[in-house]
Image 1 (tube, rainbow, N blue to C red):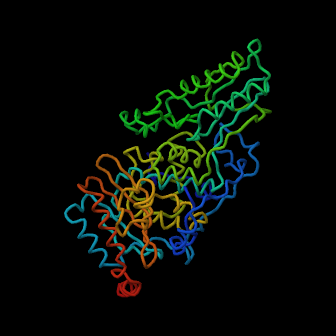
Image 2: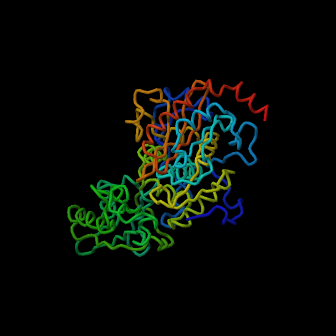
Image 3: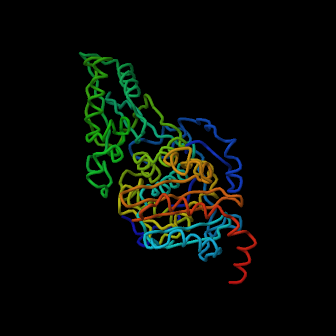
Length: 468
């Protein structure tokens, strides 16, 4: 659990570098206008354009050129790059939102901003709340900024100088049996091994003590959504429920594959992923994951916990959970976001010690709207009534197709944060409840009020600011 106030690392050490379908353009007002015409997949990019040597399990020297990295504008921001204001500028909307929430105000936090950074409404916006999967907005922003849209996870087969082979991975959520079959075939072909002259294939994996974030409940760890986070995770370590011993399952699948393809020619053993790759090792074969575009979609549209955790670790350059959380927090701090009451404990939000504020999430959305890769981030969200975790929510209402957001659900927790299209441009909205009785209904009514732009016309809002 990371307290932002405890960070002492100089910002220069964490200078900003630089899902599913790309929808919309970089600028916020063009984003929604172009959604309909940009629903196509991005070019796949180069499989060699991977991140730099963030992980000790995948060395950098064979990866080719690093991906293009983008940087957020320096702080303080220029006029064209708004930040969230502290004062409420639309009393009419403020009153409507307060009326919708009513007697449940103590369990709600709601913040609304426009593309200029004006805080249009705010109910308990600085109160610390459990975000559930809204935490993924942090890990995906961090990953997109640090790794870029060309990034892919890699699973690699290496030949070591002494004749051994080593299989190493970065947590590809789509790793499957056909990939394993290709790795076995390449091992056999590259080694010339036989039953009388077998070769050893090492499986590099993290120790069992770090498979789950420390704060995950034990009851969640046996469920598919709480599957262990490992480097060589066949089908994201799930079948119907979580696979509790991923290396054992991987070894079993490989044993059967070896028996079919090269009986007796390959022996298997599991080693620590922290063991360095020997000098002069040769890359034999690589299987890249889906694009960053697809990884972001898994995390934000489908709310896939495993993928969000892998993205956090990849962006941080470490599989040490606490260090990854610390680096993510430092990155948030470097963006000038309001971090009072914010705590990063994991990448997915399954850890109940995660904390955010609705004002922080609104500021993060506004900040990412200015990012060179904004369309990838905004396009990775679920869509009300149409796609992902929002496909069955708000269908047939004014929000249908107009709300692009990340959902979050735990027992007693409901959160929806994202971008709502209105006739006056986008609104950046975060609504978090920790204990509400009918949260979806309340969020729908809040969003409907936000769509009523007559409450916060540019003239009214500007006049209100001039009178302060």
